[in-house]
Image (tube, rainbow, N blue to C red; front, side, top):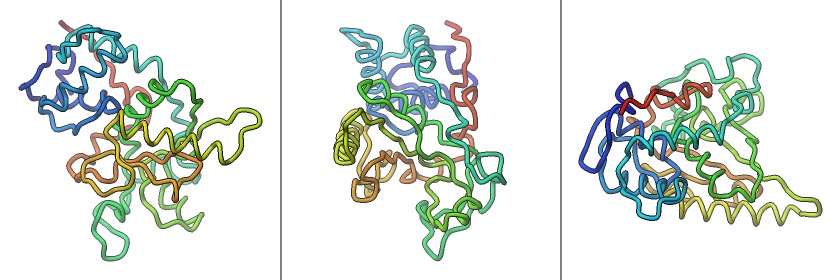
Amino acid sequence: MSDYGTRLLSKGMQGADVEELQIRLAGFRGTLPDGDFGPGTELQVTKFQIDVMGKGAASGIADSSTFKAIDVFADKFPFDFSQLKCSCGKCDGFGQGKFKGKYLGNQKTEAFHLYEYPGIHRMLLWAVRAAYFYMPEHRFSFSSGYRCSVDNQKHRRNTTNHCGKAVDLDVALKRGETKQDDASKCREIRGRLVELSNAQIGWTARNRKSLEPDNIAPTWVHYDVRSYDEKYLADQYFCKDLDALNARVPILF
């Protein structure tokens, strides 16, 4: 992303700066961080310009005002990374980088990949920011972030999603609301994320952000990127703090 913020970006362009733009707009319809500014990226920019910037006639072109608005958007929705850290007491909060290329049993799919990724996937966290933006009527918090192999063993889990590929969101209840109300809110939130952020419920489609269905996560919203191809789960896409997530750079044009 060394050249992010140094040039106007529009349909047909390619590069690491396009990839960074795709990451930051992951919650606005969403596409893959492939560095190719196609129709999907144009839609991301257009949605951001209309919904966040309030433009009546959006260009779909990422100009300097769009880059600056993305920075303002990030500042409006910061994260406390202490809420995302693993609580095992053995790792630094984001695993120990163990088990790369090793899988649970004989199933060599990402759902069973034991690798402790170096942080939380940046696209996932930028997508969560969009959820906060689109649903201000809800008060969200993280109920679960990183869970390394030590923590999994301690709690007798064998799932690997939370080794950097997933977060769980909790929705605050108002006085008098019940568990049924909680389940209803979470169901509605999932539906809106499918609509607004190009997410899917379940993991059928490749390269889509995923939400656990309500029979697995009835009263929380589990959001993950485990359906991404391996190249979109490279170490470079993960972060351990707010500075790395925001990757703030000066806008030079």
